[in-house]
Every structure is written in structure tokens, then in C-alpha cells.
Length: 99
Image (cartoon, rainbow, N blue to C red):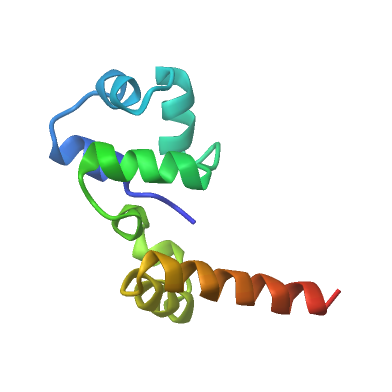
């Protein structure tokens, strides 16, 4: 899954140093995430969303995600935090049952 970090950073007229500082990480680590060399965990995704003042779903490059999966992510976005957590617990339970 690719993120639109570079696009969002450039749209705001910020340097990698500025975004990294706002997100509380080193410029080199941010650069690796922006370039796709490293993945961002959910905590970092949330921080990037705060920095860019967008939802976490708006960080995702639509072209990098299967269309059906992206549709499901959009449905999740519309749920309350409690309902979203319940759906995720259910999905994880189903995945565990397959093992």
C-alpha cells in the first residue's frame, strides 16, 4: 500500500524535515516511509493524518489498493470508532479460524 505523503507534503509546501519534525521522527526515517522503503504502522499513519489534517484513509494512494478493498476501507471510515473496532475484531477472529 502506497501513501500519498509526498503529494500531501508538496501540496502544503513543506520539506521532508518539516514533516518529520511535526510527526516526531527523524528526516531519514520519514524519507524511507515517504519513498515506500519502510511501512508506517497505524500509530504513525494517525500522526501523519494529524500533521496533514486529513483522515488516515486520505493518506492511501487509491491506485495501490485493490478496488474492492478500498471500497471496504471507505465503509469502515463511515463507522463509529466502536463499530470499526468491532468489525476489525470480527475479521481477525475469522482469519484466526482459518489457521
